[in-house]
Length: 128
Image (cartoon, rainbow, N blue to C red):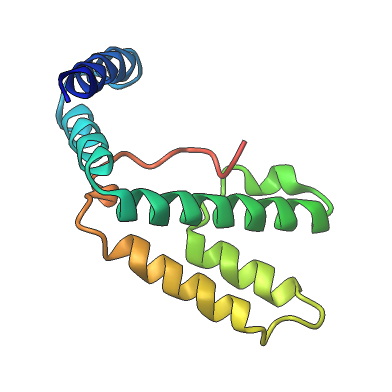
């Protein structure tokens, strides 16, 4: 038990050091550190977040693959809902698939989480 606590403390120190490099002093850093702490204690929230990020990554890759000039989307600051609508509109025979309902449920679950995702600064680029 003590070893697990020590490992968690070391991990927390490492995260804090990396956050200090990336985020300047202020509320953004505090929100991020709080979010990480909540994720470490909430396996369900972590699973939902990872699922949401993987789905968003795959949808983004699909959109980029099927447009002629994806670089024009980099600064568009599209929301996840925008990306879903674009990908669904590009779908040849799957636009009515139950998969889209599942993605919408995952999104609702992720956005209704008690973890303050929206308190963090939003990235400037669409996806690398």
